[in-house]
Length: 573
Image 1 (cartoon, helix red, strand yellow):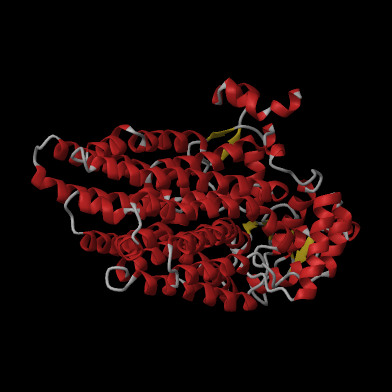
Image 2: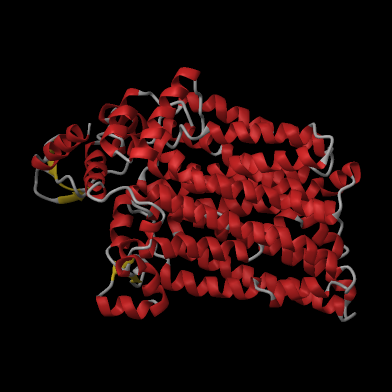
């Protein structure tokens, strides 16, 4: 299988691509017409298959949004019906992130073994399951790439895996809906967490790998759009229906995705990676349109794949090498800053925060639900026009301002000054923070994560980055509810300390600096171009924010000696 792939690569490199009187190389998109004038290849138009594939994939994101928003409107009903204490409900609210951590650890490897779409489906028959188990055993025990590749080619795994996540999510929602005690409540939430932990990595990666480069940002950001729609729907409906009915509502997107996955193609890049050339070409042609010329894009994918396959499949420890330093710093850094800013706590416990500020929880959560959707739509529309960096900078700067506003309101309340203004200021600050977060920091880190890692490290890197995100989310969501409880005896002083002194403002101020210094602009570039520019060395940014490799001296001045020691630790062993 590998030899066949190598031969096809040699053939593609040896001869130029000829189409309608034009010639072009296999490594760029420049062409020359009959008069000798240079021209750029025509961008692909959006096809119905790309749109359908994206819509099916983001059903998982919709489920993620429902799960993220569920704990806020359901809190009073669950605590009253099941008699849960603050500590017990904090476990329920945060245990989804524990499941997310487990799902994150496995998500990259599952996506690499079973495929992007397949990790969402997992439609095994028993015979297929036994075959896949044997293949996985060979991969894990013998680590024999050639044998496992040959075995993989013998088993059709197209319909085997984005539904693994939805199966766990469906079981989790049903467990919550029909629970009689806190044990099944927590197990259901844990199961949902495992499912959405896989979804949070696989969905943006799948969409990034199937979308045309000029529209990749728009399509990938629909992941965040649908997550916000799910979040907002739960906030709206949660005010009028019981928490059990709300849990049953979460099953609907899971079932829609499980059905839709039978009608969409697998990621062409994953098919090329495992040597399934015919299916790779068919999937790419189907995505780009029946009459589209995909030869340039196919050659680009093969060329980048050949380069990446010169290196062995990287594990977690292999990521800490200089050539992956930029991608790792950007991916992990954005996820750390996103979660330690506290936005997950605001989402999970919005009702309690509003009540603490004497704001009606139903009015507050309804307002948040309404305002978030147009904010995310605006971010989606601007993604491939304004670019990733400007939206991230605007988002982080806005969060800084609105956190100061919220913190100031609680400080004034604690000092018994202008207490009558606290409700309106907190509501304005909360809505402003929700808008700022929705435009950039909520979704764009996932878009960038799906773009910056080469194929040979994407599984390990994606798992690590997703694990960091869920781990930080657990820390914030678990302890925040205790801070809220402690504040009840101190006129909200603890909340003011949390919102102003204990990190969020400082985190987002640091985020602005991090984005300005480290995060490159990726709009309008192929995945292969992005990864090549980032992996050449520690990056500097030119005037428009695009990635440019820097000199050796500039590389060392761009990072601290500690970073150099960490990224090169393996060389000294």
